Image (cartoon, rainbow, N blue to C red; front, side, top):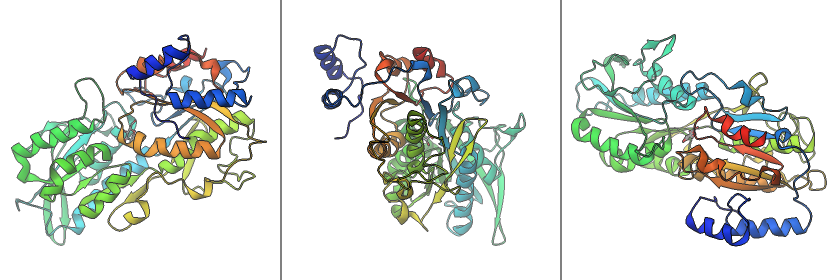
Length: 433
Ligand code: BGC
């Protein structure tokens, strides 16, 4: 049986007060039934290990300073069984920029819709304080020659609008294709944050393309987005009908399918490998085996990854999956983003890796990538890895909406955490002290 996100809804609160005395975090009813059943079987009782010593994995949002990007080493070294799982943001960002550039080069004959010699693009920025978002903005500006240096790196600030090419945070780039020279201009960019504070907000991106296109639509030749959630929202609202290539990131199934309808391309951040690693590091720590088991070294079932799929940085306690560009050339291989990665999809023996209880949250139950790609993958791997995971879905805005539901950490053997803001690791670790 699969558990759905326990989004904090009135029904969940009411359901909880009917069965528990308020010390438990909220769960959905199906999960409650399952937990009770397993507890009766004596399999999933949490151990006597102190909460501060239990395995902890941060994923998708790396503990770091949202202004400077500096890693939060305290959080990454919370205890000896703490890790981060994400993907190589810079390698992916370079790929994204290259993918857009190559598309322009291949389609130089038709790309400049109004024939003014300027290839104009707009850019949807996810979260100005998120390392992945910053890297993608830089990757695109670098490849298209529109980046301007600031403090030794490409400026990643949003520019608002720049129809006349005079904004100081970007510059006009130039591209020469087949003897023809084009100017490349970032016409507009904006952080897609809604009024309640949720970032990477797809609806905001859909509204923004409406505003941009109504004032300078005929100048927009390319739409770029820091992720597919926002990219698809812009594609559906405007670019599909206007046949303007739109590029995203994440290789969500709907975006990959849209490539057949003119979506320009996306980047797979190998969520199938990340979701596996997220739970695998917990499993290994719980079993007290070498952390590389089933990762760089085959486990008894034969699960193993290769260095084509991930890198491990010991100093950062971080596993990074590698990215792959998904375009019209290869998209058919990526149509189901929730398919597990075959080399690591073998069931573990329950007598050696007994059932354990994991508390894991998704920072925003409405985030397209996390809810439509990452969580379905986690739900498949948790079975293979004999982990009984309780999934908690946040509102994407406040950390307390999530931490309030970690009322009794002693009930769990391990934790998987996806913060709302990368600066907020201590809001979680404080509960485990
Ligand atoms: C994903 C985005 C997602 C964000 C949330 C990024 O790595 O690419 O799609 O919204 O994580 O933290």
